[in-house]
Length: 241
Length: 241
Image 1 (cartoon, rainbow over the protein chains, first blue to last red):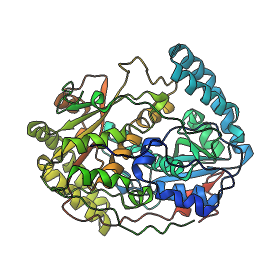
Image 2 (cartoon, rainbow over the protein chains, first blue to last red):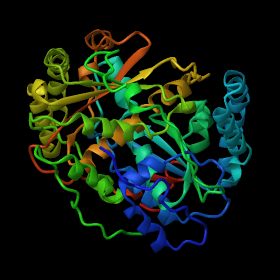
Image 3 (cartoon, rainbow over the protein chains, first blue to last red):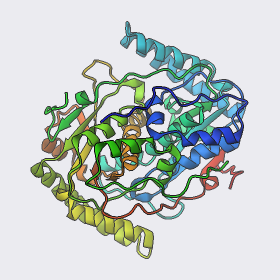
Image 4 (cartoon, helix red, strand yellow):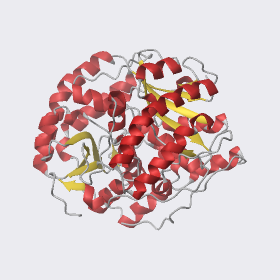
């Protein structure tokens, strides 16, 4: 089964775009958005309208949550001081992580490009126009607690209640012509992240999505062929390999 | 910013649909797929072609992974015996979880409907045509390990490498006209799930997505208004409430 969708037909947005133009892009075919999604880390400092950011989050809220808990909260960061504090934590983690990454991926050209893009993002973090921090409440203010009785289930169900919405956010951003990426390093110290964002102990920051108009082009991504990652009934039976 | 997309324009599929018809549905506008996604647990026992299942997984693979590790593996379960073993574990967990759920959501009509649909799914689990089990390798066969130095980051990055792809799978299934849902209870015992699926210790099953042609209609979902879950710069500042 194939689709004839062209490779990169979804438009790239830019600062002057009107809200109507941007909104219309959400009509892009699903398959084209899925197939052209990629991390875009180098962003212009130009503003992104609140309406655009809120529309992305509104679509993020259509995703499923465990026990339909809807226990998500999103902090939209525009304040320079808050950005600077998160940037400081990101840079701390990057000093460890980036160096390890460079050692472990030596000679891998595609990973070298990823690391260079992340390094750019770390350095320019305070200039990114909007950061969206996706969080989970551990108990619902509605009293509708996502109750989970067993440890592995608890863990996977917990994060399974935020990352589908984060993916919706990324897909909406892609369709709207924004650059976006999914990062976690600025949150390496949960205590510090809570303090920076004023979060109560019952709210855990899980991921950060910087949003802005892209500097460069959306390049293609490469993936392992589907037959390599699919097993039939039991591990190791790979009829589509 | 609003869009004029109608509420439920994306078609519901059925067993007789040709592959071409089904494939064409991936051209559905992103916004309509996002806005009409919902868990559909009551499925027909009729077969779903391998090509359709593989196309869903192929689109799942477009999602991001931590450090671009692409350390996902998907087990497509069609075998009656494997389904029966997973059904047994699902029923065990449901006896605890369902009873707790009924106590905790007494008087909540929408949750009563969710619990009834899950109860149906537990009872008919072996009749569902396809189960997709989304798994993560903890070390990459390619040697490209998603290396993560710090505990909270490790945990959120780990699940952040599988749930975006699971959400893509759910969105593709929605567009294609399939019924799908995101569940974790059949995996409550990781040891047992590994044994049932023949997974090595380095592979962890994270979520199950049953796929099939829907029995009922896709109803609407309800969500909290976006202004209620969005904070500006710091927790509690809610200008869009």
